[in-house]
Length: 567
Image (cartoon, rainbow, N blue to C red; front, side, top):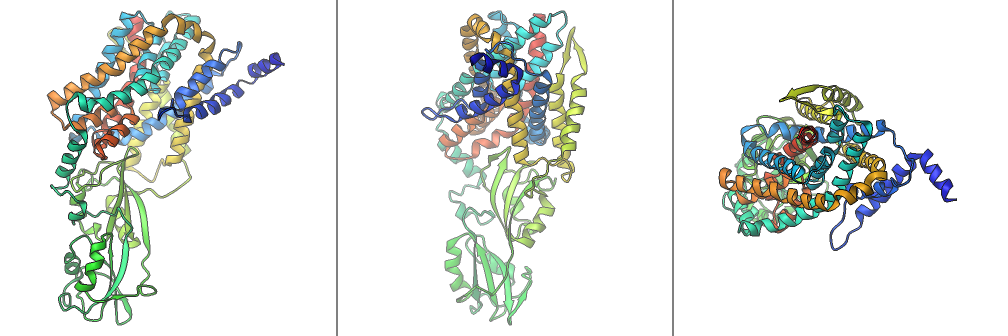
């Protein structure tokens, strides 16, 4: 019976792939005292276990295709932020990311030489300790191109990449989170107090957002109420003047005169008997409106205002680099309420001094006409869609593969990006080009998640199944030394980046911690920082380093293999 099952597994290896995915995702969801392995590490462990079945062979093409889809989506996602960071306002954060990346490269090469690791183990060490799974693919691509190596030696190195990654990934995640939770104490700051100071600097010193009328913010339900004009104080004034009489942000959304609706133009003069429909998210405005304008009227059936909530990708150069307060003062912001800002999928604090960056996603709410008017001045509407531009995905992978075939000789070392690195570069370019032509090349977020997440874990499953038969031997040989080296590699680059950002760049401590989390490519650490700070402010330093780290650390996989092969 057992022999029959094993024979089926050998003849149908796709069963083991799907079992690795199913079991890995299930284990990855399990939590113990708030900690979980995550899907990627769990899939690898399950695949390594199933790989002990002798005679299982996974098609190499499947591994290449799945990794290409994963890494293309990585590049596509971070491309706009990567190129946007090259501008002046993001240079400081780029330097932090580059210092951490170079420190990681020097450290991993030193550890590899110290412990006599082979190129595969050294590259896997970096991929796991710095939680950069994409470096596995570029490392394996580089191993395949190493000269004067037998196929058996290359297979052994590829196995060592997977084993070293598996040994170091858990501490790379857990240790990274623990380290970032301790960093505020290490540098002697109260993170919550520092975050509050940073918020105050971005809000012009206001402690309460309700005291910032220039901020077009909607964090509560927008209210619409109608009032009959009887107060002589508003008669003869323009609608713009009436809006300015409220303590907090309020807009005249509609006007009714003699039973007929009028367009609420800013210069329209108010007459006795007019009915003004006021929109605001501040309850105090609605309480004061009756005294300011006149008695409240039943709004039902009086007006028909079509509201809209829209996600907008900010692309317009006139909006990029501006603060929320500056955008709020523009004519096209009239009648709008800002509900949310996300950057690389992470929430950004909504403060008057918050700077809007290229490809930030801002969610606007208001009357449909107001929202549509603003979208034209800000960028591109992210309307819900299920359609993925497969021309871009397929064409991008073709172009990336061609880029990966290029070989550059540097100091006698033949450097090639390989398929993984080439497709990553292609993804970066396509992601950036779409910001210039947003009607083309759309890949919805749900599609990106499937291609990126499934592509990565399918690739990891292939790696684990292929390495399984030799994994135990490699683990016994280098397990302890690889784990110890992973601990050092998890810690040292972050400390180097911390000293550089604090002493040389003299950045705000909250932004330093956010930029280090991005440079370490560890989103879980950002969430820890936000929880400790009680604020979203750490993300302001996170996005640009995260984009740079995804690119540089991925390329390091190939570079490490080539350098270690020469040492």
